[in-house]
Length: 305
Ligand code: GLU
Image (cartoon, rainbow, N blue to C red):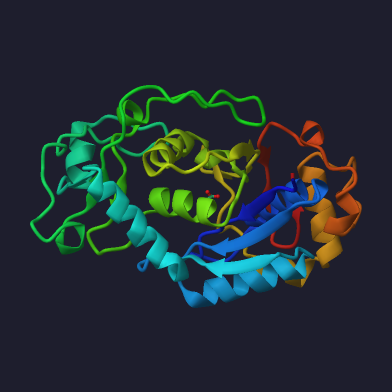
């Protein structure tokens, strides 16, 4: 049976070269298998997401030559998210957690993604009499303790005990917004997604997501986490974010030039020869994609590596 993949960018800013590379790899993975691929605009964070970023994202992805079998905005899937919270509450898994980030910073235990780990201290708290909808506090989901064994399509071992490494995840924020960790699991399952291709920066969240799938009785897709484009920020390397937006790239490159460059950065071409995404389908294989992250610089006119 043909696979279903998805590209799921957060609409918290303009697309950048790393976004376009992630979209290209995800699209190639599905198309090379003769599968379907969806575009899901992750727009649940009311503080950071803007409709104009979503509109620009759709246009920029179309400009580089990617097409989607369906496009959906995550906020439209709210009924699924509520049903998942109902399910977790009915199984005694939800609890209010007033512990703040400042308190977690004070505790001082780092999570694998560089944030602060939560020590599950609120596990004994009950939901208010009116249920999860009546809670004005962040809600967390009590996961099962223990190691989730998991291997990435790249061969990386993603085994982790998410309760120990991160702590129980927030599933609904104080402001009522559904968290990424819950929404991603629910939405992938509702769309029948069976291949999740995304950047390596999210790899450490996968065990938490698999633990949530198990509590919700949802199937586990195959995961493949790929290289990132990095930029030098001071002495540190950071995800290539923000240094140059797609609108600027479009002023300096044709779509085919940019796709050729991205394909070269990913290891799919030996030169940055201009090409279209569909020219890359037949030759696409993860064995040809570079495993190591690439350091990229924006000169003001060109991307160089
Ligand atoms: N929305 C997330 C991001 O843009 C990615 C979600 C995913 O692929 O699981 O970083």
